[in-house]
Image 1 (tube, helix red, strand yellow):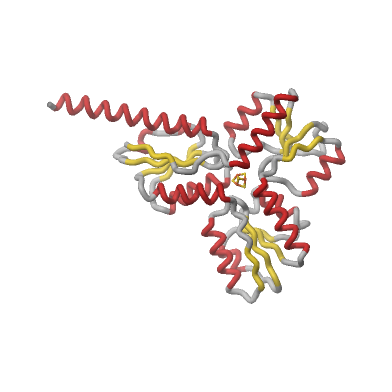
Image 2 (cartoon, rainbow, N blue to C red):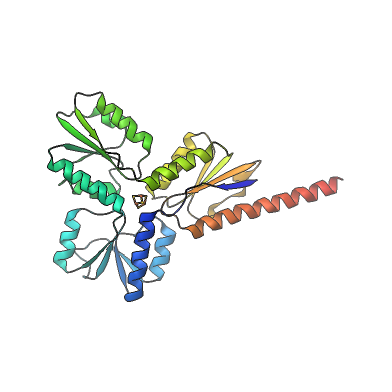
Length: 292
Ligand code: F3S
């Protein structure tokens, strides 16, 4: 079995930057707090907790300290609350997310009805909506866009990790209506590159392994892309979850990973798959030898 890693996989620039900020803080202070878990990867969050990084869920009740805003970003009310309560804010919001927040605010100021294509439960989307004073509407898919009853001018922006095809479908549904539609594609390039690489790889392999947090939006999208291509796809968080039955009679196995998956986990997964491969080859050689 040949194990092939996608051309673009694992930590993106925004997640790496957020982790670097936390590490910088850890060098100067014993305790560092993050507003919510820093990234959607339980293994990384656990490792950080062992180093003294604590996640704060509610700034109203926590003791004022140094707090890192995670890469997903937050709404303006979180900055005000932090300031009022005496927190020192270290802002690790990804610049791509900041760009979406600014676009949401700008379009709202210009009188547009802002539509955010994405997952309404995701903190990034909730933060973006907050920058419109709660006026933006969230649209998850084409069906929801078709059902919208709107007039006037609308601006469509997207969660940074949305699938390109979903944005296209939503945009097409809006253009069917009598609306003035402005579309700003705010899907980040790291997401697009990972999705394109997964799409390319899934066409060449018999099975795909997608590594990343089960709560990671962009990892789930990668798994969805692979499943939609009709290839058996396994979404795992850590190497221990691999099962050798996944690779029975498999010639080529593909591996990809979400933007919040660290390289040490990817390496361990690839290593484990390659070791099985080697064992399998050795067993085949022994069997051939015995037959002869
Ligand atoms: Fe930023 Fe894109 Fe990563 S928005 S956090 S670079 S997936």
